[in-house]
Length: 630
Image (tube, rainbow, N blue to C red; front, side, top):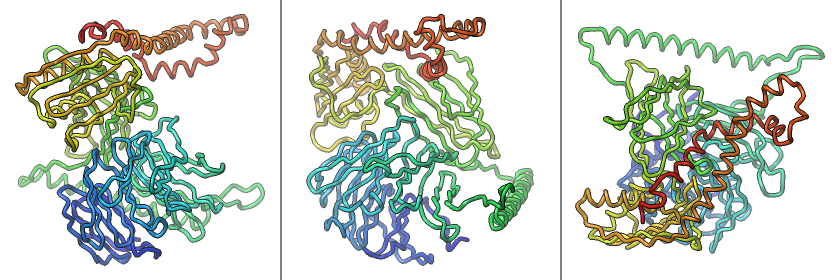
């Protein structure tokens, strides 16, 4: 039963519990727009604080009388609603946390930033930065209290990695890190709770693909996956506690469309006697009966409202209105297979999604995707239309994941037309930029010993102008112009493993790469962007011929592997036919027997990257690889 409910208003971006230090955290704080409101557990509002932020609040943390708020790039610390400290981040802030003051005896805020960095602050100053393996999306205190020292923070990343770092007063100490070998979704929420009842708190993790995971610490330090459960929507929040029945702990998870799901430790079945079938308890049966009644009541209400809408829409005074719906979308580059994931999630069932692109891209198969895809022929010449595909979703599908692979040097726009199952029919269009160097990903450092080609630009352009050109060319670059007079970014090509160093300031830009093709693409795009703004550029090159041999050495093992994989896949049908006719294949050479034994894995790998070999051939046959930059 609801305890209290506020009136509808602006969207709530964050919700946190707070209260005086060392007391139960029973006060509810919500952030809406740039305002923070506080409620007691009975629903009485005791706080309405309008901050001085010009943007909406994206992240919030409460510690006693201290309030930590973050907009996209700005961090603010308030104490008793009075401004204390301020910090401007170099990239977008995804989450904020403060180490427990009662343990570390000082206020130590930690910002999770999009550029794969945790920034540790002291007042309004940066104490130090912690590099993490992916863009951190969520922070949580280890065991809910920072561990014995109070300095331990668990982080989750948008590419599905999980880690623990100790934040000391002078330097970070990494404790453990869990990769994402199963290629599950990004981590959205973390909690610590002793759900197994063994006296040690487990780590509860919710992901954007609906995976709910429980990690426990069977070994001394590193956690291991103990249980997992799949939901059909992204998990927005996760919490452990005792909710439904005394004596039985539960895990509660809320999803994007508003569903609240509970996993309980209460036995669902009870044994009646020897040889008898397992029967549902009386209490469970009454719960199910109550839920059925509630469901029937809701279905009747929906039918009544639908009839009422039909009648009003057909009347002479009817006014047409377009129903509003929100789409939760994410377009990210996967380092493992050099592909982009496009995730579309709607709060109601999706009818169909039409995907259109004005640049050549490949659509890859996704195992979790149950939608039926159909391709339409398109004429690329007059309309620059290279792809037109329709995904028809099954009933009750609210989340759709697509995978695409782009070609560097060819840039444009990918559009997704999302149509949900609502009346009257309406559609939303979402656009995603395919950038010239779309397969490059930000990294913390590069190998400076590689043979590098250099592109130097000089001209009458501002720092903001050349930064906007770099944003246009490369992914994962913050749109906001960096503070200071110059900036350096490092990138790695997820397909080939080549690298790029980008350093620029007002009137000058220097780009270094061990791949001459990268330099060629940059030169073409930057020249066009400068010409659009009527800026004259002085362009110079320093080509290292050794870099061509170096890049070919990087391509060769990939090409060799893909050729061997293609050869094995083409032999599978013939070998299977031989196996059917002969029955026994012991006479075959060991390499052919191993192909038969590994046939399913080989087919699965080949299916995941159908055009990989053609891409590598294209790199070698593309004349820009050798000549364009020379």
